[in-house]
Length: 110
Figure 1 (cartoon, helix red, strand yellow):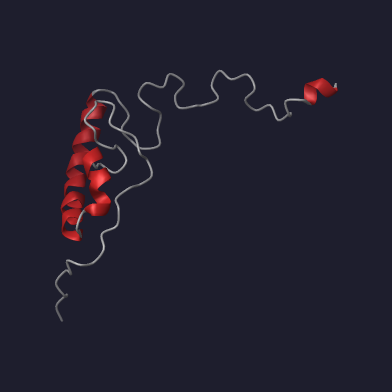
Figure 2: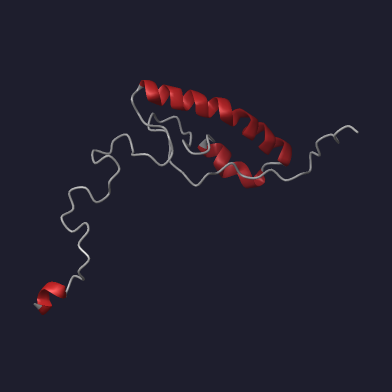
């Protein structure tokens, strides 16, 4: 038995991976999903066929984006430190209160 041909009406899920960060090179491409700002904005209005076209372009776009950013020594892997982050992604770096479990008014009670 052969597989049924793809149904053009089947829903196409958003490729969003909840890492909504624009390429630091200013290309307007999200480093998480690889869509352009225009594609993200239009997603809810696109037909399933148009969505499939967008999704088909994403692997090559993301690969090119990551390669270009690696060549520039920018980290393009979602979830890692931002390229301009001098603290290596540690939001508490340099914060003397990091790890201090006392409530702010505990000092006043002493």
